[in-house]
Length: 282
Image 1 (cartoon, rainbow, N blue to C red):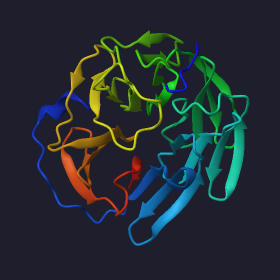
Image 2 (tube, rainbow, N blue to C red):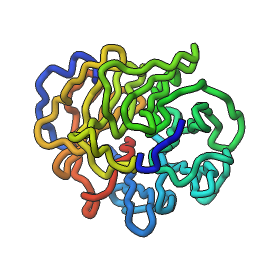
Image 3 (tube, rainbow, N blue to C red):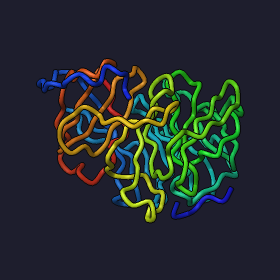
């Protein structure tokens, strides 16, 4: 396959959501910004900013759920992991310089999944234990379910979403998806995906990771789409490994529990309007 270089929560979410004040929990917020050739940075209240990685101008990157590590594919096709001051090359001979071919992390932040051609692979963050997950046509903006079973991605032509069952090797095309430009995350069991559907299918964009997007909740079995029950203009959303959801809107971060109930709101740090929110820990 030629990759173009330009390349729900549960049913309980129908319940109304009420605003609550932010708690004193110590969250760490991880962002990607395109300034200064691309950086993954973490912000913690009282601690300020810390750079996790500089990923370059073609950011094929992913931040680990623990908020401590980043993985990205270099221009010359190396998959590298940065953990603290340690930089480890965990795979080579990949397709670099293609923004949509992003890796993804396992829920425990110990493994990274990526594609080599149409072969989905996983490898330990320390470079050990490389293994094949299966073959998939959904190679762009990979997302991995927290239970480890499903890997989702869209095609290089941005015209389909595929869900790979890593236990059976079956690669299913999700019903009803004819145009798609982003996969942000999967629910823990892979039954739902947070995606972006372009307003104009004729101009899907170049496949880069969006700083902001209008999230759509998609049932991966039926293809049915649902709105995320948070009022306002949404500019992002993703599942966390425990099944809770992070929703971004108007400079605020809304945390929903596994039943879709709002549990707290956080104010975003200054200067993050044009940065992509990748993880919220804590």
